[in-house]
Image 1 (cartoon, rainbow, N blue to C red):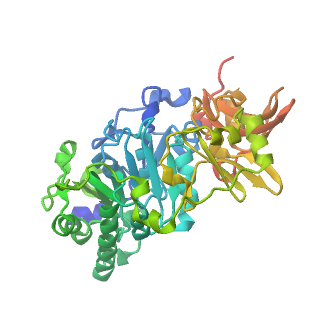
Image 2: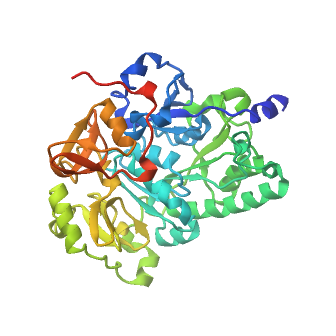
Image 3: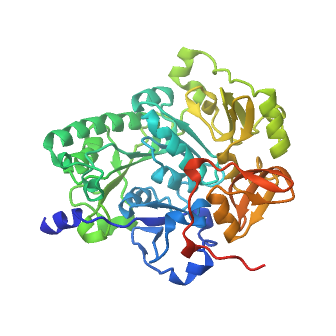
Length: 460
């Protein structure tokens, strides 16, 4: 206990979770390539320690979405979900308490070209950072909702293949980061959180299809919020343990399918994760419930009608992206466009039918300031091969130009119109050019002063 108490007073460095689709090509700016060491996170192969002298959060690589910065302990949940493998490819996945997106982005990157993620965050004020972090992955295979878990379970019963619950908890592991008070160890706080967690887990059980998987995680050490919750699910919800063989070194002695990492042993803030499965009961359907069969839909009648795009928005998307939203909406199985007031969204091909409901938020493609429509930052960050942006005009920047752009500066170019700025074929944002310079349209929250020791002028 003394070692644990001492370790809890120390702040542990974040690690870099490397984007799964770029693992082979990942590289730091050349000036720091020699500093990259081989230290990783034993329970999650896609994580790297930050090399000495590398200012990760102030690098072009970070702006390009090459990695996500987070505590190594938070990766235990992704390890339990086997997000570093192909296990989640093609699945319909829900992150039930998703903000700020450290786990949701890892799940999204693991879904491949056919999977889909619903990132739900009940607290509306936390949706904006979640949406931004999801956009940094370059993927469009997601929707966002801000529903209480009980309400969501009423809407989509028995639908999901995998559900991750990073549950609200007493947060004892956050004491070392100064993000939690000493009240985190108070018995009444632990009991309050444990009761809330059971309500969330019961809702998750309703959302899960028979044969589906629940991954449960917390950032606390309290048994009442960890192993006791697992045993409650097994006893009351008839869930079955689903051990993760690669995490056997971290297995809890109090739960066969529960795993712990500790600050005094594993060089992280600490975390708990577990994996369980919902058994298939003879006589019940094995496949996920069809949307049309959901009881809540029968009560509401038909799908909510979506607002068509303004003609100015439609024209902008056609001129900048070379895609006609009106024609796409008429084509079965195509990208689905929708406007909600001053935001235009575009859901991916093959998205579940329920994304058309008014309680979902889609990947943003355009926004209106005053009476003027502009392409959104999230749209620029899509994969360069994305059908929606593949025809957009682009301009390639060297290291120095990229650093200037990320700081809010202009870009020299003889081109005109809206251009996606990219560095080493990685999109960074938009400029609007007049044939001489490109005016910077990078959102304030995405700007940074790139550290001088992680940039180097490209040779020409």
